[in-house]
Image 1 (spheres, rainbow, N blue to C red):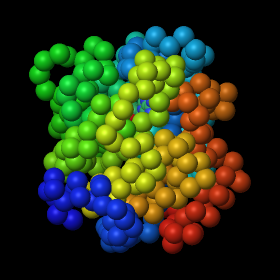
Image 2 (tube, rainbow, N blue to C red):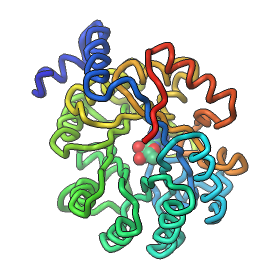
Image 3 (cartoon, rainbow, N blue to C red):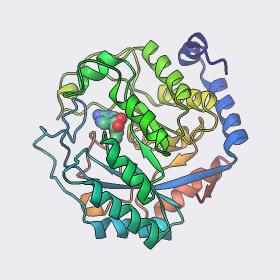
Image 4 (cartoon, helix red, strand yellow):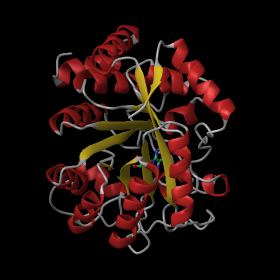
Length: 333
Ligand code: 5AD
């Protein structure tokens, strides 16, 4: 893959994407083998203090029932991840430094490490350097923070409270996390109103420049309970499985080393085929949802969010059937 804007743009718009998918599949086997890593996603809480214009969990949305897991709930989900042979849990929450304090998260990370042996990835939003330093010290190894778009004016338009001046706040935080010794993950939404194809080309090149360890990509799904979703505006970037998979393929070719999940948003857009199509265009990770059943539906980032594989035996069977169809196997780590 020629890492130039021209070549990337051409791949995003070529009439037939199949050669791109085939090349990404081949690169995936070359660089990552035939394993799929499973990461247990634990959604700690939807009590978010941010008001992002696109997100159903934004603090101004009166509709969701708000919840927060107890530490014991989180530990129970982490034990389930261990019992299912996953290796890693991802702790994700709406951004809330009052609820997920430095001390509380440090304690949780230490308990998960010592009581379950699972590795810990954090996805708790934009947080102070001293917080993430303490969590690294406690044993967290990876941090996920999507920059959503590298187009600064679009980023500011959809993130109330983002600094009006200066560089992209999330890109700055990603660099600090890297310096603290984290593996870093980031990514974008595809099809945000006002997003341009050229900005997606720049986003893809930025993944490579940041040398991201993990890349999360999903279609933007309009939520009528949000300002952006209630007032649909056009985007040059399609919200489609095909376009999302082209971006998976390009991420794989530009960053062969990266771990790339087939995301919940992709499966929500196409519940029957989304997961397998993601895995056949370069993705090598899947993140089953291990949030306790009673809260899962409340972690509603966008409408219709499928609860990507409840970890019951039957849905693990369906997951393994997809892997087998593609010549892949569940891999610990
Ligand atoms: N559609 C698709 N993805 C969304 N996210 C938030 N809101 C939406 C939406 N309406 C994604 C963002 C965020 C991640 C946790 O969920 O990229 O970083």
